[in-house]
Image (cartoon, rainbow, N blue to C red; front, side, top):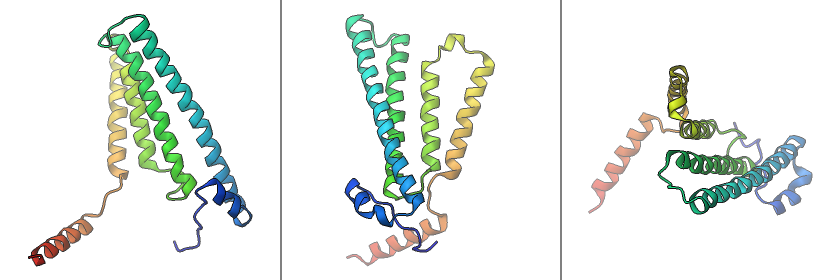
Length: 174
C-alpha cells in the first residue's frame, strides 16, 4: 500500500478543520469511533462506581474477609470488568488516530482472555461440571494458541540481522 490512505484526524479541533476534506467513510468511521469511546467511557464509570460500592459494602459495611472466596470472586469480578472496559476503550484510541486499522486482532484476543479469566474467577468451582471445565480449558488453550500465532513478532531473519549489527557496533566501540 502506498500513501493513498490519509490518516484520520486525532483531536476534536483537527476533525473540525479537516471535516470538509474527509471522505464519507472517514467521517462515519471517525464519528463512530468517538461515539464508541463515549459509550465505553460511560460503561467504565458505571463499572468503577459498582466496584467502589461493592468494595465498601462487602469489605467495610459487612466486615467480611477479603480472603473469603465469595468476596474475592465478587471484588475481582468487578475489577476485571473494569479492566476489560478500560482495555477496550484504549483500543479505540488506535482507530481514532488512524495508527492502526479499526480492529487489532491481537488486542481483541487478549480482551477475550481477560473475559475468560474473569469468568473463571467468578465461577463457583464446586458447581463446575467436567464438561464445562474441559470447555473452559479448550477455550483458554485456543485463545492462547491464536494469540501466539497472530502476535506481533519480528521475523527471525531480521532479529538475527539486528543482533549481528549490534554486535558489530559494540565491537567497534573502544
